Amino acid sequence: MYAQAQADAPAQHLRSLDATEASRVLDALRSEQAKLRNGQKTFFHLSSGAPASYDQNRIAPRDAFLALDLDHVWRIERKSPEGEVFPLYEITVVPDGHNAPIWKVDVQMTWANDVARIIEVRMFYGPPAPF
Image 1 (spheres, one colour):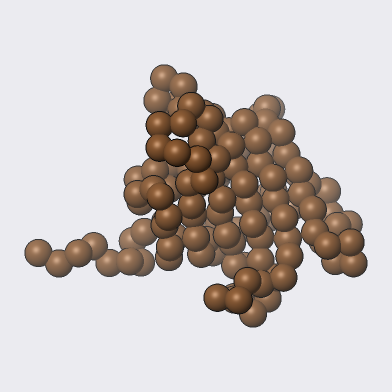
Image 2 (cartoon, one colour):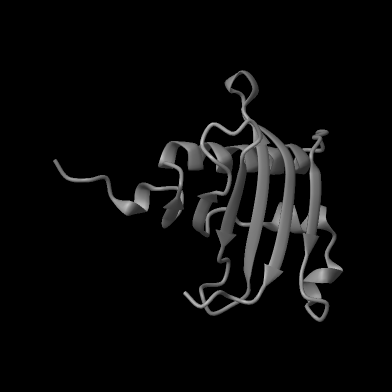
């Protein structure tokens, strides 16, 4: 049998988690984006930042979160040990390719009763990493 194509994965690179867990994290983020777009209430801590000279600092965190394009995820990494009650994930989004500024998104979650719930999203817009 052939291995599943990499294009089917939720990101080009997964670290310390499998494609199913990565998809659940992205699905939870997309769900929260949809709720906010539809005027529903959602409750998690949200912050966004960038180097002081970047125009991105002029955009409110909520607007930055809603504009975040989760179809351009480069990497998802679980930063906390497996089985952690409140796992932390780091997502790298490359909206304009690898030679342009990128988003680093830290997401703290809980999986209470097997339901994904976001506790906090911290977003940082900055220079590209030396891939």
